[in-house]
Length: 458
Image (tube, rainbow, N blue to C red; front, side, top):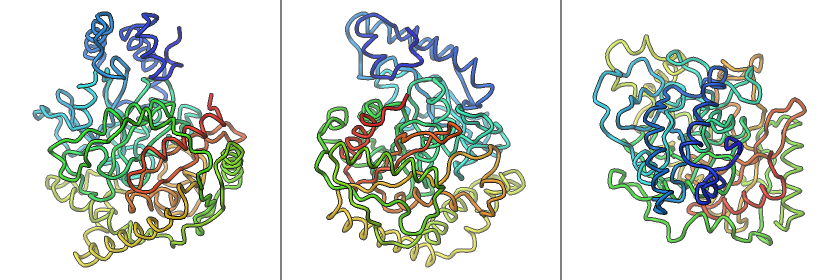
């Protein structure tokens, strides 16, 4: 059995029958990493020895009939933004000393271990996860498995490329402005940014109210299973939500036919590539044919980029101010510009931007009294040439200029998921985004599951 083509759910079913073992699955994942990661550069650290040790322990549990979780023994990776005991967390930066004690697990890492997942290694990120593509001076450029000349997106581009290429079934990314959904769209996988606080974070992100962690997988079922693992509280995050009252693995199968979805092709202000627009429109029609009631409607807000820029740049400046002297000459030049911009804003500017963020959340809350979910393209363009922050020749000034569908919903802290909708004529994946009211992660997953059923992704 070629388990690199299986979902995590299918792997676990094979473990239960003895058709496959966690050791075999881990060996296959490591083989694919050896074969493909030289081209994609999805991993900044691979620990085959520790992964196989974890797989052997899982194999014993399955043999004895005592798995410790729904994903016990599934090969997975974590973005190099999460503290991981025994592995350095360099966050794509030359300014973080690798020679220091690494003896703490983040909440994400701890939950994965407690549920028996096999940790293959850590995936690449731009420095401090600051932009919508994945490259840095420490580990180089991460490329799209569907076309290595193209970007994988970012900032969780390493995680998306790993999952899409079969280098493990699951990964965990971070999302402060689209960093899970952008690469999920570009790489043709499922990526969920859950409600803010649904997955605890430690240490606290300097990007504060924008910051989320979330699961990345090749199916909606696997995404739901992983959210069940990650959504447990952790005392180190005072903003963490209470435990879910039901499981996401069950909620994903909720019947959503008859619910009302607003379809906004442009949010009222976005220029969308015609091929992307056509693919997403066709997918939305498929959802309508399946029983979701579709109405074309914009939420009614203007582009909130000015407020987002203040929140994002001040967070970056706060973080970078903790770096050692001389760091300004060593960080990514683009990140340095964000750092310098952030220093120009006052506390009053920050509070004003945060007030705009709250007002946007109230507006979207009212919008969802009329519409159960909002559907948009995930990204208005397909993946572009790797190694660039913006599409070459576009005249755009920074990554938020081409991600206007994603960062507004970091500001509102709503759950939002990217699901594959189709491919361009050149074979590049295109994602569809589903946004729900705060705390409706189950609903967002269920609508995503319906799309997956009516538009199967190979």
